[in-house]
Image (cartoon, rainbow, N blue to C red; front, side, top):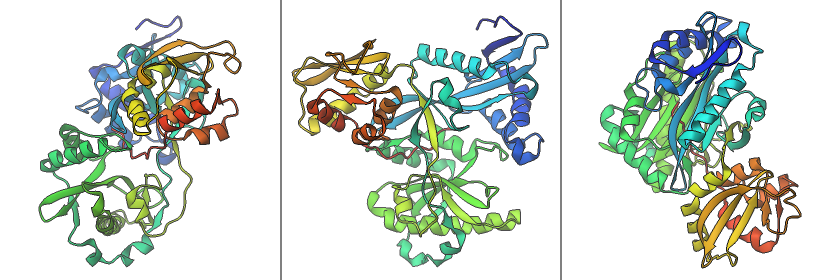
Length: 440
């Protein structure tokens, strides 16, 4: 990458940066937790990202270097992965560890790093970037709130012992071993073929999650498996320690057969109660609750003891090319329209996004292609525009977070030419449950 015109150079990370990156991020991340001291969990996480993580190579870090001293003063990393949206495989980059040394703040280094990151992903064909972090801040960098990643009620620890073990019907939960990786990958492959949004893992990634991280790594999770006898029939992923609030976080849960959920939920809650009490004893801090980082519609949540409702948090999402995102979803759009016995009578359908537009091309009423085009000067009055949809609204529709009726209620500047267009796009973009546990 080319040097900036001032005193900083933005460049890809190198393996030799590992120690300096670990020190930088440990000194700027979660400082409210450590009272200004370096955070050992952050340092271990950076070290793991640069030491065999399945979604990261050193070049996935971007760093800002002080040209005068050669020191690294700001950095971020993109964790490349594939998510599955109702069976369609989507390349995704999860942005993490955005940080700048205090004495170098105010020099727009974050903005420069994101510009370089977005340029990289445009060249590499990674259509979706996601980040969880400071409220509103990332909207300034082209991100829109487009996915919820939790919102399930928090279950007080006091209600967990009331669950009766005999209701688990012989199902139990035990720690996973690397020998379970193939079975876990098989479960994820089945889930990826369903009508959900998730981040499936292959056997190699499961082995890493089970045994590849340093004990101190802040992103380390405990992977457990649901078993009946020796057969693996699901998984449960939870925190490796209690949070500062005494909560045991749950990041993922799945069964191989949906019919197993009533008994599986009992076994999982029994396990979470036991783990929470064990963590309480070792940390000498009270175990207060189980906190599922899951959506309210998740089967484990629906079958959970009554809890305290929580407002969902969310991911901010960006796509540099909305038409490319729609093009990647072509098989899904075609399948949805075919299932509804819908055909489009015109050769094209134009979705304008107030600056850019997507041309959907049809042959014999069926979707044949999606291409990008320049948007109309005034989409609301342009006779060739079928739908004018703000970019943030389109992201929510494409990822299944909002339905078209919900978007129409929320965005007055979401405009449709006629009822036929509304019918087609309503079928194209139903709500899709989010069950994403990203590869951090």
